[in-house]
Length: 255
Length: 255
DNA sequence: AACCACCGTTTCGCGCAGAGGAACAGGTGG
DNA sequence: CCACCTGTTCCTCTGCGCGAAACGGTGGTT
Image 1 (tube, rainbow over the protein chains, first blue to last red):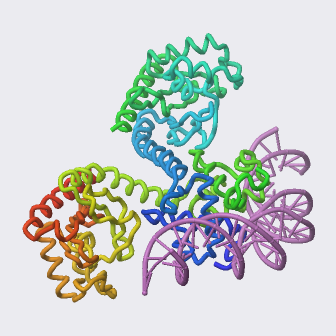
Image 2: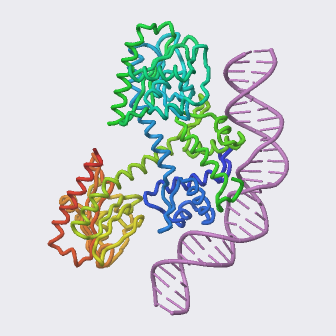
């Protein structure tokens, strides 16, 4: 406890976290004095930590009763995280089902800051398979995942997203706004988006959006395969299946 | 940013919270380098904050990919808080309903560390009314709230709770173990617990437990009134009503 | 009403521990 | 095999976090 039981611990941060924990654990708001007693901190220190936590939004300060309780920033972070967890948990069996059906790698991703972020991946069973990593980021416009989500966005928002400079990932990447627009409309009509060698050479991809009750896209699933294993005439079948699964996940999420 | 835009901010804590926020906001795990870039921290500092956060359990360190993501401590705190929030939200309208029916103050409380903690209060409408404060703590054995919860505990756990030294709050506080045991059995039979001047002079109280699917008590509601307004023959009626409401809340919670 | 005791807030100077540069290590890709 | 990038360790300096003490405001007590 004293100093370096483990190295590289910064004590102010550690103590602030202890204060945060204490406040979070105590359902009702607790006054400064209680924090002092509990953590054996001089009141000045506890006061400063609480001020810092309040400033950061992790803790709320009820000026009426001079008590501190868990804050909105903490709650919003927690909520975001738990809904993400929920998404992963719900989607997982569906992803696995798709892998058993097709043997190809299946991805779950969401859109953040204008890019696609992979948040779950179930690997395909073929020796040669497409393999990304959770946390990887890719452009919206060059991936089936991104296109699937874009296709469900309202006109205005979509325009904003596409007004950024669009990276040319391969020789087949489509960056012309009107061409993209046409592809997105088609994707929306079909319920799934496609992409062949637009993001990576030799890779083809089919994606479908997961939406909330208001049809706003919140995530997407995709199936990635070597281009040779996704011939043109297989695409509609797989695409329709992906759309089905995405819809099922969407339904479960809303329940 | 320099120093004292607001006084009493301890910078290491503030920065650690910034790191925590960043990690929490990024769904997928992020590497040290990303944290540095994003927050413009020297890698040494970011490293230390991350270590501290990991040590505290707020952040997980995936040693495989050397990435950091939100940790179990954060999740457990968040979960506890959100279930509490849920309880409050679900109970609130019921409490208000009771106040409109009887005009007396109605309380919501849970049991923690062997005491009753008020987590919500809806004030009665009489000029003279019982008035507690959210966060107040009272003994289990001298309150209707505490007795209601105790009466639903399994024998063994109840014994443990009652083996502590029982405070004498008023001249009517019951501390004799066998007498308490009899009262708790009765409370369990009736579905509600009562108390007259055992916790505060001139105050009478009726409480009923809120339980989970396994009949384990997780909280309780109570109605507190001046002793004169809760005559003996009114008690069964109000008690039964409280038991009803508590059961309704229990049901909603389990749904 | 005056007193007192407690709690939250502010001030201030000392000394330690946090900051960050730099060097080291380890792994990856070219 | 070498160059680069990322994560870890070391070290030294000084800035800022610490806590005693003083202040002010509030509620309870005789």
